[in-house]
Length: 130
Image (cartoon, rainbow, N blue to C red):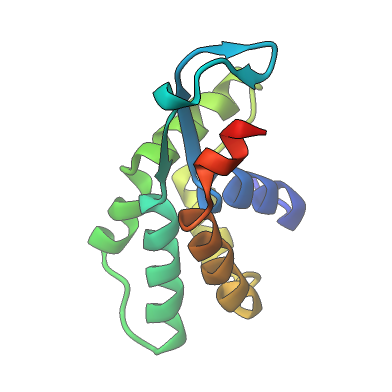
């Protein structure tokens, strides 16, 4: 199965690059009832693994199975696969690998890193108080 850029972009950037945000606490009708119990973790291991793969490829370095396994075995990838299965959508490692190696993301590497860095520095408490 060949995945198109839009589908991969949506999956990669919303679920992976932006990380998976886990919010635990009391949530009532979309508002945080008590911001002192909000805990947010941005799980970005898969994103860092993909950026590392892109950099290695860009610099002409050989990719190893270990490079790919850092992405495929990450918590973000596991959750993405579960979500895609719910929607009966195929999300095979080989399809993902082909997309990463296709060159489609090469010009986006700086923007991907910048977005991830911004999310990692986001003021979650400020957002919770809104």
